[in-house]
Image (cartoon, rainbow over all chains, first blue to last red; front, side, top):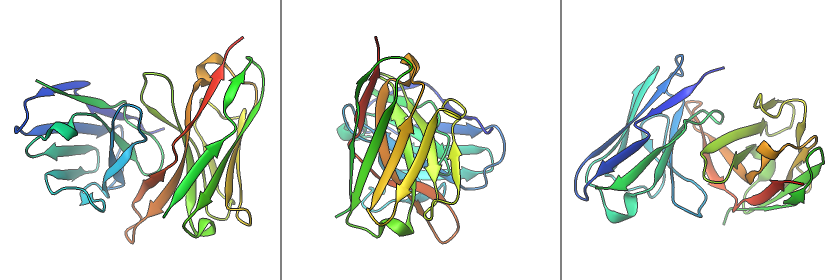
Length: 104
Length: 122
């Protein structure tokens, strides 16, 4: 079973700054990695699939990179609406435990 | 417009059973793989089960294997999750989710339902 590990658990960043979130797989998953954003009381929203392709309607400030076992989600200039919990997912299966992005 | 509407959640005693349903509309249901994903109160997302478009391929998380059964009825545009031998740790919001696969074989969940709450408690 492949385990997905996200770090850090909580990230405190000021609006306008860059945020970098990490996701590590216990074995290679090629580029079959997706990122989601979830706000309280809402279903998750797809941000990135194939490790680096933005989903429809996702702003360009969101970018994904990596392959194999190491992946990164970068938000280039944080907006107020970006403060949420972010999850990575292997294919359609295992999720990471999430990173809470909070306002510094 | 793609819509996924879950139903069937509620309060059930430990050891009991519940059947969740998901009504899909706005897309060709029979062409898509589907998932159930759950989220315990205040916790992260947990993948529960996957079913291929035809229903011929099914996978389960270890935490529910042998107790939960996923199925679909493509004629009725519906996805199901039969949950038996329920435990307190199965308490969660259960989401029905559509799986998309791009031309490179990359999978993701592109649409989610609003979720249905299952509470296992005596």
